Structures are given as structure tokens and as C-alpha cells.
Length: 262
Image (cartoon, rainbow, N blue to C red; front, top):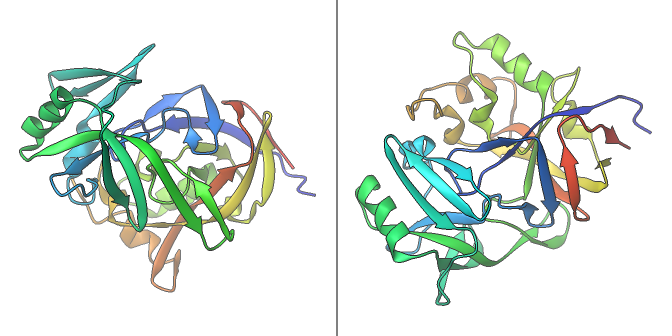
């Protein structure tokens, strides 16, 4: 039994894949991910998904969830669409290797994004996507996240990295869903099964990181850090790991301040 005490200190959802996140005090955990977390994404005219990897400016689009709608802000521009709204015409896309069925939210919303970004794109809502986990040897019903529905990070891992950086960064670089207070760097990697509130979580695997973490969410500028520093001590077989991926085993609500129970 794990006798250490861990507490949830931060929770985040990211309604639109690769756009800015929203800190929340309470989140509804579902198999696919937190409610309204990465249920939408942008696709180009070839139906390929669009991310910060090629378009760092996406960090400067800020979502806000209202009662039944999502408002997106970019500089002095704002646009709002209904959470329940979507076309009934399926679009067949992919998230990496996963075949994914999505539906355009509406033409007006797609036009708004296209005009700002300077190329044709659509905002789409998830229909169906199954991700096969080789680590867990099972198929998962997943949101439009890269691979797994949840990313957990320990506070000490982040602090340990920041000690190595000349210019400190914020935890938003890593786009976690759940941040817990820890005392040893990267101890979250070794957590297996645990419960937060009434929700049971299972650790799937440490999360491999890409160039996206070098994109400063405060200004959308890509730097060389923190990937360069992380690669010096968190690199395994040419992959850099930071944080760990989770799945949840039942639906329920979790809150900032909740403890992890083993």
C-alpha cells in the first residue's frame, strides 16, 4: 500500500484541441476524458487535425465555457457556439493513427477560425474515436487528445525542472489535466491504481513529450526550452518523458483539494 499523501492542487480542461486551457475547481471525469475536454478540434481542408506543433498561434485562442456555449477569444475578437451544436454530416479524420469520425460545428464558426488563421479550416466536434493501448492491451473510448484521456503531473517534477531553467516557465506548458502535490520528482510515474473522490484511475504510461512544450502559452513564441533541459535527464530510447497518462475506470466528479486514495 502507498502510504504517501497526495492532494489535487490544480485541474484543467482544454475544450478545443491545442487551444488554451481552462483552470477549474471541479471536473466531471468520464471514460473519454473530463466533460468538455478536447471534444472539439480544428481540421484543415484535407481533414487533417491542426495543432500547435505547426501553428503556435493557437495558444492565443482562449476558450470560456458558459452554461450551454463556448466562447473563444483571440485578441479583440470573440466568437461563440453552442456546446450541443454540430452538423449531421460525418467527416472522416484521424488523430495520429486513430480513425476518427467528427462533425462540423457550423460554417460560421469555421469561417471565423479560417479568417484569423489565414487558411481554410473547420471546427469539428467528436463523434467516435477508439484508441488501442498496447500498454494496457485494450481499446479505449478517447477524446481528441493525442493518445490518452488524462495527463497527471506532480508538483515536484515541475519544480525540479524549473530549478534547471534560467527563465522559469509555467505549468501550462505541459497541458496537464490533474496536478498533484508531490515531494519527489517524477514519483507520479510509479503510481498504479488510485482513487480521487469517487473516481478510480489507472496509470497507463509516462507521457512522451514533443516540441509543443517549447511553445510559450503567454505569447505563442517557440523557444528551445524546456525540451532541451528535459532531454538531458528524462530521455529514454530517444523519447523525453514528463507527466504520466491515465485512464478512468468509472464516471464521477473530482475537485481541487481531493486526496488520492490507494
